[in-house]
Length: 174
Figure 1 (cartoon, one colour):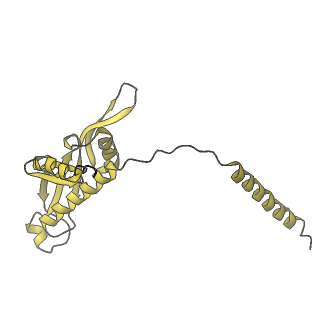
Figure 2 (cartoon, rainbow, N blue to C red):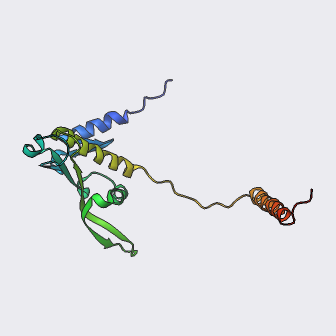
Figure 3 (spheres, rainbow, N blue to C red):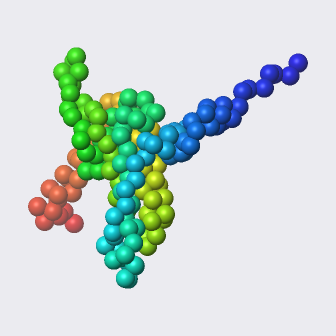
């Protein structure tokens, strides 16, 4: 008898993400309504000749961290990773006394390209990179002890090195 086929998780995610009308895929598995991504444009200081003086090509993207459909731990890592690009947050203490950032938004500015659309997509790419980095669960470091053999080898090497240096002090025994 053949095993039952496993449900296609990607198809389920795509169907769920498609349920948000006008939503934008900003990271793998993260889709938000277009209203969450607030763009503003201004005159750029970058390349463009006289076009710089006439056209608003610099893109600024503002995203409220709390509006992103992310788990709380991922949001906390996102706030930490965004650092200088994170504004308006406040520090609150939980019941254990640990302090956490809440609220606020990530502000990404791009004026590297001559066109508004390329700067807009560059802002989205930067946001995508931040979110993907925040979604990566950090590996927990577990303290380990050196093995007995490695400790003995280290001490033997130290003794050997000390013998070499003592031999130099006496002028060598050749």
